[in-house]
Image (cartoon, rainbow, N blue to C red; front, top):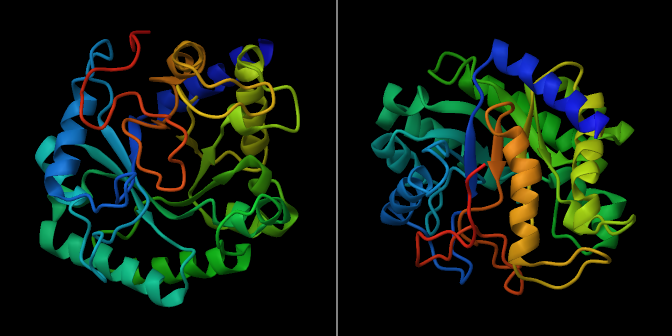
Length: 313
């Protein structure tokens, strides 16, 4: 517990110098594969702000793509929904589908900037080039049959390309980062990515860490030790906690059991210790991962605003 208290104190130091945000992750599709549109995003952002027991603190959204589902390069409707609900955004660009798709991501983001103006850009927390691309392309990711990723060299190139495109626009100077797992961040071949970003995004799920004891009783210490590994390569740059949570339903992962009781314990012991201290995007408000139909990390069902458990801290 000493480690946890030490890291929280580091978060307190960081929060004195920069604003911290609290929100959820939002995919472009529902877990049945259907596209999300403006009414969906607006409804979810409003739901997040009005969750009982949270005092309206979930006011930020992390996105994985800037392209509206079902289009080639139209800006995602979540941008307009964020303006209309006064939600801050950690913008995401998908970076594991090749150069052509990434260019469309850039085009969509630039188009949104021109169309929506300061009402949009003033709500941008930062911009993430990719999500877990380095993990998926690593030996560990390949051994776990992860989908297609991108190498460190590719992500570095995409970051440089973004900075070039942003020059002279309202996006110039916005923090640019990348989101990945601690196991990917600490690899020597990815040091160039850590050096090229303004912030690092840390995805951490003790539930899935099956190489060591991962029962709920170990979750707190496992979470903080993993975060320390990402912090260790950040060179003092901000580290956002971009994904963490515990499922209320799903298969047992070594010692980790998915249940509402354990999801509540993890939220209380990890989430409540971080909220207001470091920027964090909880995983998740409603399920959206089409590859995880047998597991649920959602705090609320997709068709109900009633939380599965008490969210007060």
